[in-house]
Length: 178
Image 1 (cartoon, rainbow, N blue to C red):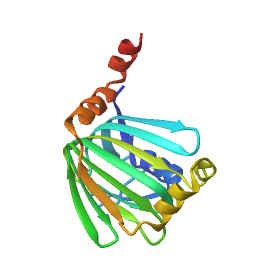
Image 2: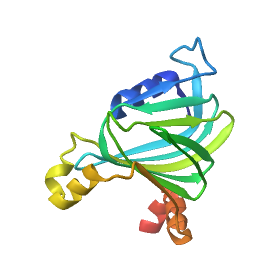
Image 3: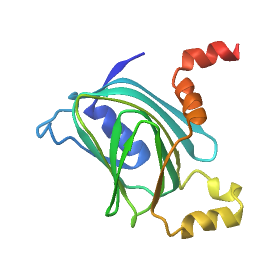
């Protein structure tokens, strides 16, 4: 069910996920100022993994800056564009592209979402207090922490994009599972 997401919703998202939000077109905003219209579904999985599905129309431009550490953050853009910066490196993701990075105090992600744009995304994040480290092989955890690459961007193969787009429609998935 589509709804309006206001500044207060973004403040709650920020507290939950360690994100600072700014609203440059709303210099004197109130908690009820509208920012998005659409659907956002958050799925918390065991081990500190969170998947977020978004299908929204951006009403007001907004900017984000990560505050928490995470060994893995992935974003797949199914529709629309997202401008990202990791430290001094910038990326423009469009439909069909994926982004992967780690987050820390030394490596923050900033994003800009323009007004009057349609945006459909899937994101996956692992959070430091989620207990993931105890479940990963030591070599994989060390690889993530010692990786020299700050971020990776790639074109998602069409067969995978088709499946991810299908996953954006929970009603279709429920019918298919029945």
